[in-house]
Length: 257
Ligand SMILES: Nc1ncnc2c1ncn2[C@@H]1O[C@H](COP(=O)(O)OP(=O)(O)OP(=O)(O)O)[C@@H](O)[C@H]1O
Image (cartoon, rainbow, N blue to C red; front, side):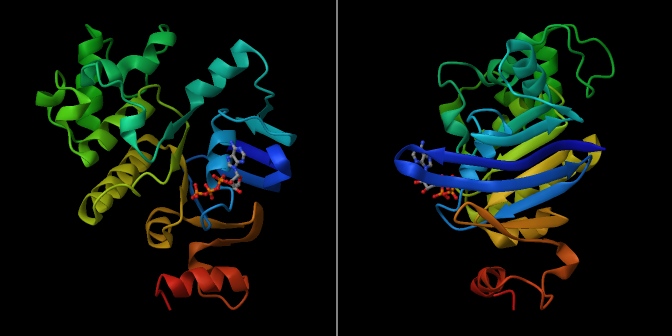
């Protein structure tokens, strides 16, 4: 099943900056699709369009087979429930004054009737849900009452991921989720995302300038350059001669070949 589909989507900012040009993308259930490109290629714009934080100028956006314009509250809520984002810097999404357990369950507050798939029984309290979520992201229960400042960068990113999966989304948009972390911690976060994707049959759009991380995570890769899709291929075809010259440059720069 197609979880999300963008068709010929364009986004132009002020002063005629064309951040995305007639871009199309579809993501199947349980699939991880990578998007790579250099700084300024339009990756963050794409991420924001995919979670409804930015409006497209042209083109279509559909989720679970239905076209959405994100013009009304109902559509926005439906979208938010199914598509969540993991940001580059978790610090920016965590309220420093909220204990971790509250941050983790915050998205659920607007979806009182939702029964997330990861709960096998009705929880006794919101704290119980937070415990399950921390467990899912491999964070010790001792951090439930802690505050963001008490946590390392990697731990904060785990909290950011717990928050993002709290609604049992069908799709996770990961925008450079490991870029601000140390190398060893990066690997742990990638492994966690992969595990969550597989256990929960979740789809991921993994956006990064780091081709190694994208290759590790994804089955299919899209290459963005100046707001345009210049290449799209399955991971097995990464070394194919058919690759776009720009893709070859990116691969070479990452010393893959
Ligand atoms: N809010 C905005 N207003 C005006 N121009 C913008 C805005 N956001 C992005 N841009 C421009 O749109 C283009 C694409 O930017 P975008 O941030 O999507 O690229 P990116 O690939 O994520 O880059 P980076 O990795 O540096 O964040 C750039 O030329 C950028 O300057």
